[in-house]
Length: 236
Image: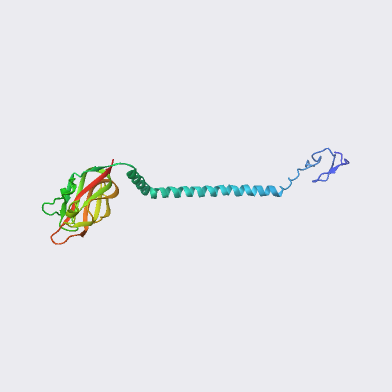
């Protein structure tokens, strides 16, 4: 091996090598090792940090959206009965109704000659007579239906003279039982005057309605409470 060759010395063993050699002729060490890549400019490092932050931001947004969706679903389940009632009430207002007649009428008490059946016979000059407040009348229907309204004709008659001749209940406690045995109670406040008075109800799957007479008026002497007529209406 010619040790007198002039050239760049090997970085490892110091042997001179011709300029065209890529490896040391003695130890094979690379004579022109690769240089380290220059550092990235500052703006490229910022973009990388932004990409990292953007990735974490997408995950955060996903979790937020998921939480909102779950909250809306939970709220929908909680509000479902209210929403269903709103739909049914709207159908009641927009639809038509027709009268439905009970198949059985019973009273907890009645005065002689004034049976409970008089309250559902379609005649306003005959009435159910109850001895006092707390008496009730129960109407049973052939099949469940949506009770949209009740019309009460209070007193002994629609005639002002006959109306004032007997006592009247100025409040009626309406208890409705549905096909599943659930009960709903509404308090109907009546105006002390002759003639029909309409009360919207909006109760589904009704099978039985019981009306209890309360808050008596005009109950002096030997008078009793009179209820001329009850009318029940379903959605047609």
